[in-house]
Structures are given as C-alpha cells and as structure tokens.
Image 1: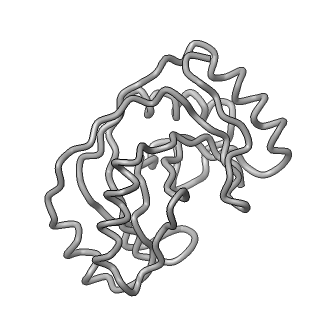
Image 2 (image 1 turned 135 degrees about the horizontal axis):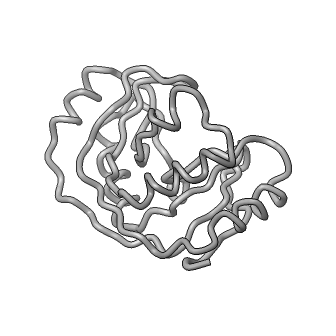
Image 3 (image 1 turned 30 degrees about the vertical axis):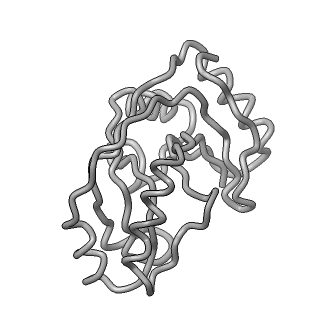
Length: 166
C-alpha cells in the first residue's frame, strides 16, 4: 500500500517515542517510522502513483498542523488494537485529503468522512493502559508542512518526496 504522508518533525516523533514507553506490551514505531497519512493511494506502481500525486499537488502551499492530544482507536480495521495516537488538527490537511479522495478512492471506514489525522504511538497491548495514556495532558506541538512524501508501507520507505509549493 502506498500513501501520501506528511513527515512529522522530530519534536513529534520524540514525543511519540516517549509516550510509547507507557505502553510496554504494545508494538511501538521505531525511529524513522512515524508518519502522518494524508491519503492512502492504493497498491500498484509506486512511481506511477507518485506522478499522479505530483499532478494533484499543483498549487498546494505549505500548511500548518498541530498535535493537540492523545487519543485511541479501540478497534482497528486492520492490524492489532488498540491504536494509541497523537491527534493532529489541520484544516489544510483535511482539505487536501478531500481533494485527493476525488482522484484516489477513499478507503471505507478510515478515509473520507471517517478520516482522522494522527501519528501512531503504538498498537496492541492493554486497553486499560491505552486509556490511561489518553488522559495525559500534553503541550500542543505546531509545525508547518513544507514537504510531502509518497510512502511505501511494505518497505517503510519514501518513494518520492515533494517540496511545497509544487
């Protein structure tokens, strides 16, 4: 599966790593594996998908994002649950997601109206521990996305990066 991602800054990935220590039985993300999915693109030829995305990103300017708290999905459509994550707010990211849903089919249950921008902290483990972590207050983290990447989730690597504006 390929996706268009917003690479989170080190302040966000460091925070996710620190919080993951509170979930010792969960599977955590390793350094360099934290991502913020803007839109899933599907399977197929990564280079072709990246070319399509490049066309759709014409005119997209750098945009602001903000981590606002910790939340969880108690169940997950794929993979282990619960999924504990950093909540991300960004009207511009939501608008980009909606725009890309007109070109790349939305994944039922997690995209379109169901899209929740987030950076995963950990998957699986004890639900009670996950719930306790969501009660923790964190300082909001703000940043500006000035680049996006087409991400290969099978290999956990970017296929192509785009500087904004494209």
